[in-house]
Image (cartoon, rainbow, N blue to C red):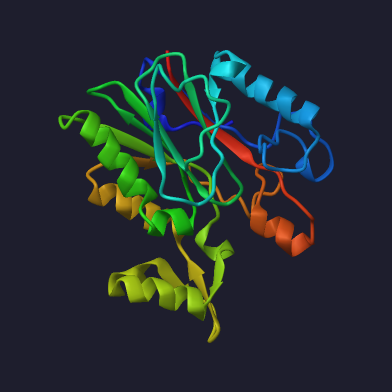
Length: 251
């Protein structure tokens, strides 16, 4: 379990970037797989999410999870929709207490946010697709729409590191076509491959939105005993992969 130094100082906010340890799943899902979209045993998944809920001190029914599709869709959880089983989005926002917001990742970036002035929390699932199509901007704009006077903090959790994220030239060209400034997020590997710095790409978006950012800096691909990784599972030829969960709630 990993924590943001900044968020630990907020008295009424609980958060955790969970590792893959401490759960009940077996095989490629060993052990705390929280991905409902995985082919893992449903009983084990339930036990894993129960473990997470207990650690967060919330009722398991109050742990809000998303059906994540790398979109730029944001949902605000209110008293009306809070009992939905899952939310079709890649970001959640709420000002309700006792509701925990969860995001699952396996290389993508988990982001938790807290507007200290208005007591609003949020979580974001940011892969390159969601990040480039505006999931971060959409989330922050929605928080600001709820109240224009705000002070937002974000913590960027464990994700794939730059030296682990190899991309081809088509991927690189797609980003450069959007903006020449995006060259800052690439390192050269060889003539045909680049490395992409997803963490910095996400960080800079938050900074431009005047969000104060801190990092829980771990590489999910490299640290195989601690985290699940989609890329690593592909390299190993596994037919599926586990997902780690990151959670935030207000007490």
